[in-house]
Image (tube, rainbow, N blue to C red; front, side, top):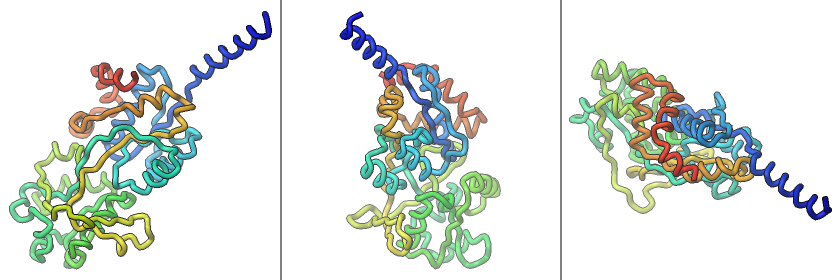
Length: 315
């Protein structure tokens, strides 16, 4: 064999090896049901029709750690399944816009509001109502003179956001936040609604709670220029931030490590092309929470029944 043909054969072998080299994809294990089922859908696509390898890393639930892993590109964390914006603005600024080490797909829309059970809607329908001391007293469970509201889990950025809102609306003297994990709150909510007790809480769409209970959202002031100035990454975030108007719809992304473009190009391409429908996510969540289905089973069944959509992501 001539030297030229030897070099050509070596090049072809190297090329084939590169094409076939596909690193295992490490998917986050975020705590809320929507994020979990999205992770299982992505895993089912990668391990199934893509004939590659993905793993949901148990306990990989801290969004900051996931973002750091994606930035490193070392395979410790490759996919952030449900990146809410602007809730995770710090992550976006540091890794998507800043280091440019994290890429995203086309987002789906979500809402974030304060809710009461609809049996309370005739008494509480807006943030203006929360300024009424008699209304606040109805939600005072511990007798300290302030009404309680669930602002979210202790480590959520949105939990800080709602505390800023209550301060900006001048409600700090009448209301105090309750910061407990989502599962703890949901267990409490079930008891509250069963007993038809007053309860005020943050929630979002898509989520199964809206299918389980009859809920009403509170109206807020319309958005105006300068009504939202959040500095949640600063040490004095509560004092330095203001937010006195309704939320924009959240934009929710699948984020993934740019390193996948080299380590597993087909998966990187697929992740960039995934488009999720909020109604579909609602259905997934409902099947898991209300019907007791396993997230992996829901994901695999959906992928099998919707290969036309899946093939659109892959191709």
